Length: 200
Image 1 (cartoon, one colour):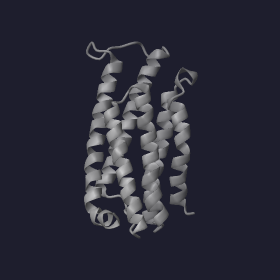
Image 2 (cartoon, rainbow, N blue to C red):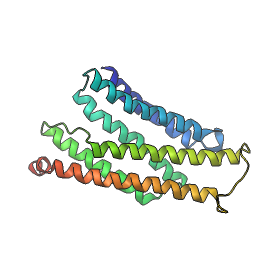
Image 3 (cartoon, helix red, strand yellow):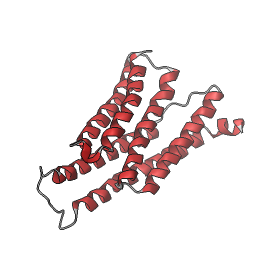
Image 4 (cartoon, one colour):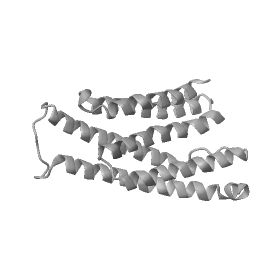
């Protein structure tokens, strides 16, 4: 197994540690910061494995399939945790999950037909927007955690409860990510519809 593929596997291995950190609650002080650090590290491996694969000509069929799958596992885990914590609207997360299952199904059908569907620019933009949204939500929640720990004085945002403001701003990030997810999903389906139709 080459180095880019090892980094992809590492990203999947980091997911349970990320989920454990984000859901730890008061049992683990600074748990949002820990979750943010793990997610940032996992996201960097996504950038690094692609860069190494291209620069060293180490692109493999395994990497083309597993790299986007690792992204989906990482991102969906974060979004499901956000819904559980009440910091993300469930309908946005459901749309993103539906899109991911649809694209994965298209990839599986294409693979069965001997065609490897690699990520396109829309898919990459979707991934970047999701990572940005997740990092933003984790940062906002960590600020609130610092207040609860007494390390930052309580404050308001133009007289509003910061928790409500942060959830609203986080949902704006998620709305952008959802829009890109839907657009990229439709593009994937259109580009590969002939393969899907042929296998029906």
